[in-house]
Image 1 (cartoon, rainbow, N blue to C red):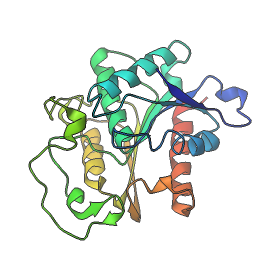
Image 2: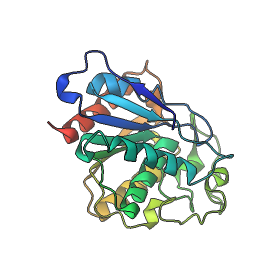
Image 3: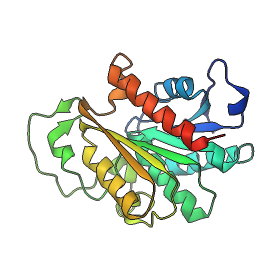
Length: 245
């Protein structure tokens, strides 16, 4: 299983037994974040990041990406304690993070210390309100009501859109690890993120939500924005606190 390994300069001895797993964004059909999501977090958290280069749709629809990510997690469990592992991702990788957590529970595998779900959705069966208002770059300029078709048919393939791993919002979310959700008010996946966050809360999960104002989908990909630096610090600090000593 191919991965990218990002090791921060000056990795402290106290963090050598800890690892972060990044599941990159890119709409399930490309890699737009295995480095941009890993390098800042590795630097701020001072913890190694393993970015999974999972198989992509449409050639490899669900559950290929889930299977690949679970395989890497199981391999890392041979070296790291589960309480010393965090899984996180942005956009498609955030959706995948929630799916992997659902799959780990289904398989009865130990949960990681925490999850990071940054601009996501947990429901492929229904489009949220924000998808009608915003595009990748912000305001879309039109107000089309959500259609009845499922989200991203190339990824879901022939699977039921309400499958509890594909769309974790329909599954039993109890017992999932502490989770940080991050989104923004002009994010096309704002609705998906807050709806999944609420589902985690209703399941009794320690779920925290940070919403930035007037910024677009996955804005933290732009390293020049001061808000990007703030968001990456929030993410890294959450992981560090959950991993503890």
